[in-house]
Length: 155
Ligand code: ATP
Ligand code: MG
Image 1 (cartoon, rainbow, N blue to C red):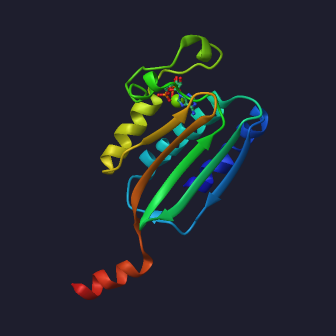
Image 2 (image 1 turned 120 degrees about the horizontal axis):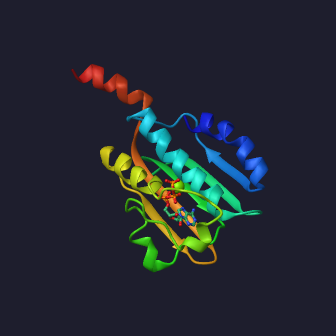
C-alpha cells in the first residue's frame, strides 16, 4: 500500500520540487483496513507536500520499532505553533488563513486520520517546531510471518 502511494505521488513530488526520501520495509505488514490506512498515509503525505513548500525535504519511514510497525513522516516545512497543535485534528481546523490561502483544503484531513487510527486502536503523534518542520507518526501491531504457524499449532 505504501509503495503504491509513493509511485502515485511521484509526479506531484517532482512538480512541487520537494525532495522525498524514504526508508521502507516492504515486508512489514499490519492488520487493518487497507482503505483507511491508505487514506491516513495519503493525507499525511499530501499535507507534507502542500505545506512544506518548494525546496523542502520530506522523509518517510515504515519500519519495525519496539515490536510494532512504525510509520513516520517528517518535513522541513514551516512547522506548527504550539497553540495550534492541540486543535489540529479537530474537524475544519486550519492554521492561519494567510499561510493556507494558496493551498485549498477543508481542514478535515487530520480529523479523518485521527479517527481512522483510533479505529485501529492507534493514535497520531504530532511533533512540530515552528520554523523547523513537523513530524507525524503512528504505530500499529505488526504481523509476524511465523506468528501464523504458532497460532495454528496452538489450536
Ligand atoms: P484537507 O486535508 O481536508 O484538504 P487541510 O489540509 O487544511 O484540508 P488538515 O489535513 O486537517 O486539513 O490539516 C489541518 C491544518 O494543519 C492545515 O490547514 C495546516 O494549517 C496544518 N498542517 C497540516 N499538516 C501540516 C504540515 N505538515 N506542516 C505544517 N502545517 C500543517
Ligand atoms: Mg490535509
